[in-house]
Length: 437
Ligand SMILES: *Cc1c(COP(=O)(O)O)cnc(C)c1O
Ligand code: SF4
Image (cartoon, rainbow, N blue to C red; front, side):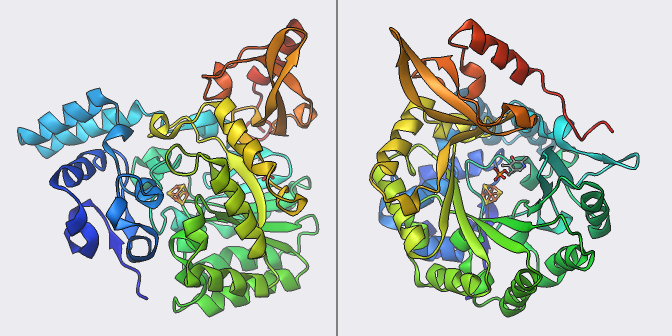
């Protein structure tokens, strides 16, 4: 199968687009002026149910929907387009809407970009001691775009918002000098969009450097869900698997962090084959997804996903809360409801699936997990803990917030007691460890 991308301007080339109504096509055109849209022939042919686009999870996951923009923004764009405004006018309007959609949540830009020998390392983020995130310049796009994506500014070319690594050597120098780092996590976009030849430059540089404290290389990718041919039929698929084998042979753990948001993504022959081929290299596959309204906000879906992942030899890892950016309001599920879904699924799977943790929010102080709802004396509380923290001392301490069944993000929560206020205040005083030295 040859990869073919579909965007707003060539949507008529997508055979199934005839099944879309004129109103749907118009919505896609308007919303995709602001939020990036791309799908491909695999997603369209094998994952989407075209007879039910109104409710289909994979359609919602890749096709722009009217509700993803505020009604005010949507109407403004629609009327401006209709009166045939100039390109410049449209561009300015689109940019101003984008900047209102919180393009960089959780202080990523200011707080996580490290300095090394007086230089700002643009393609690296270092937030938690053990793990360095790498954004290879060539991996800043994806095989298809998720409508909930928190990296959407990277795809729409707001240039100053891009993270991109140019030199593998910079990465090696940085990791070598930071003995606390055990993990290097390649992310993007999607690093699997890179040709094997490019990816191997980064990997081989790390392998050849013989860094003793490096234990794990991770690849965050949606390719198994959106383009499994990357591991089976692309012309450099075999070479990619040989690269994976080289990592494993060095005694380094290779973890493919696979993003799966729905069971249908695990159901095709091609994805099953791709998973088998990756596992045969000795690499592990761990799975994660945000919980998204109208896509996977039911316990049955998560329980089925975790079971199917385990059956295919993958390890369930995280359930996330979608970040506060882009079309977040369209997908957001209240925290309490997310926990109910998590618990409902967790109760119904065996211990083998319970390697998963969540629901978790990636906030400025760290990854905050909602452990659940409880009661202290007569007061209902939400029990939280950090799974990761800028300050390692914060990790693993249960703390309490006032019960709030509407809250969708950590910053909406209030401490339950004065003791909790102290801790909340510490978390708010973010002191980046790596970005100043
Ligand atoms: C999630 C995340 C990591 C990885 O955390 P793990 O708990 O080890 O999976 C690393 N860096 C950043 C910035 C992250 O958001
Ligand atoms: S695969 Fe990941 S980075 Fe790419 S669009 Fe989806 S969420 Fe964003």
